[in-house]
Image 1: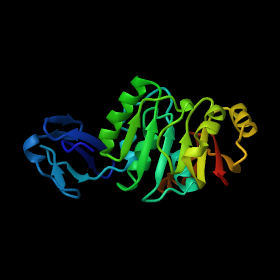
Image 2: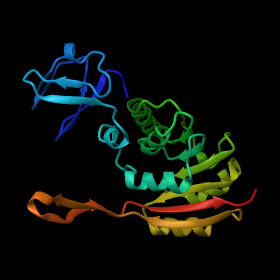
Image 3: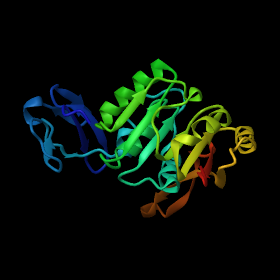
Image 4: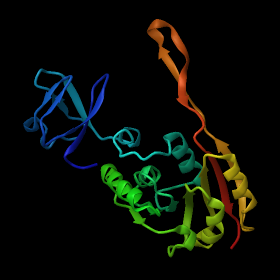
Length: 248
């Protein structure tokens, strides 16, 4: 994250503020003179005595601050991608359909040793993704404004994400760029997209799993004896189709 942006927390609230500017909030005024060279974990007081802590923001915090595009991959799906793709600290990751960069930034933030190659056809989306990468403070993403249907020059990928409307047209082109054993996930809102992808799977690719994540929020107020599901949540967003390269 940019050095002049601080992420503050108290018992009930979190906020981002600019350490170089006076910030007038509902809790009081944060003055620049009181914000210089603050380490993570240090206390910061407003002019009227309210106490906040300067903490290092993590992905769930930074997601609230990013520049958003019409569609964004949610954390519930990013989490499944990371685990089922088997991403580790030295992984080389293929990311097609950068969008706002949420997937690329979330993965890159896991370790500075991870190498993410993120491809996006639309220049305006790439511009947004680069700004979001600055917010995350990650420098291990290589962005490229290209059409992956025409192929990419990078090779030996350990895993990949295809957030594209037509992954069935891309898979046959990019299969050769992955190691044997590499996993790829397609992110598809429609089950028809999944069907087309499965029918077009290259012979050296094998289906591992097809999942859909539904996240239901619960209301938890034990002091009022309330523990029940809420009426809101993040239900269907997309189908995650995981496939694996089993031969050259």
